[in-house]
Length: 500
Image 1: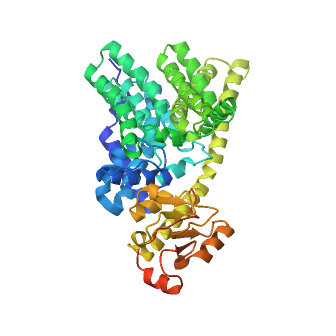
Image 2: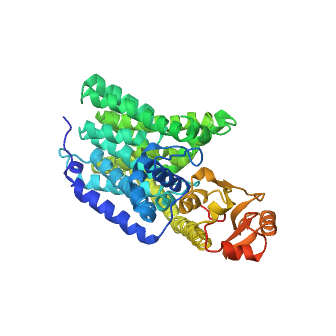
């Protein structure tokens, strides 16, 4: 039976309410979803209409679409509803990191409550300051990406297992496995362990084993004609497999402050001495997750940092625990010796002080990047807002009139445009260095000058709001009269200029 800790006494309902309240307040920032989130919103809408088309966009992930499908009834409010869910996951990840650090540091028998709360604070801060140069952690919060939610699910599953609530842990593990394939081997190992111990009814385990592959492959098969279309889109040129794997490991290393990596190592050594195997198991799991990301990168899949975020979160938690344990050990050595004359005591104090200083300095540098990350999110959101405004200005019927695919000059806002036009993502084309033969195009000021010239020469200007301009090409009589007749109708639009 699990030993109750301080973490178990914290009201889950109160914490959940606080997390949701903060996520709701974040909607006042008016920051738009990113590429993947718009794709899930489109698929959720299509799933509800039984017209799922997964042949274009990001790779298929079951869990976000299972969430966005019921949200589709909210219409234009669905993007905000998804942001509420995903941002709650981001906030919950920090809370759960703190909770897990508290659980591993302070228990009812040791009386280390102050140490536990310090570890919780370090873990929560460390998670907020994860470093991802591809898509900063704060941008993932702003744009509704799924990896922060994945971290919350993984940490929640670990917490529930340590609390002896294995059915809850299994449910959270299944949810994590419906977000990222890296979770599959860990869920499989957990299910094998539960099966052997008979901890919960085996019927639940059979359902879990069947549900994960079914929800990954059957909808993609129905929506694209191939159960592996998402995997095929996600897989690129493997390049040099060893180099790709090593680069994925290096990116995972950089996610976490160096001081917390060192402190996590100390936590593992301290746990071995004190007979607490759970710390070693968590450390092995984190390294195993990074290894899975590296192997997949060697096989041609993207080894970008956020795919290793769950492992980084566990390292942050262990680093927080190790930091507190190291400080306690140094304090004990000092108290037991005449520390001014004892080299061991002096070394312990110096090492602990250096670790704390390094963590503070690196955290300061990472915190300094947050305003810039927020500015980037605001710039992208402004571009999406202008894109929506110009699409609305052109009007609702032009897509049907022109009878050609929608064209955009900006890949990153392609699904946002498809969402606004209520079109399948496969009906929105992307052209960066050429003009389409016909249709309506929204061109950004960020498009190559030659492309802008081609579209301007071939098309009729319908509307313009910097940084976008809407043109009709060969889908109406030429000249300004076409612009007049088409104004107020809906275009096949192409987009550029917004940036992640």
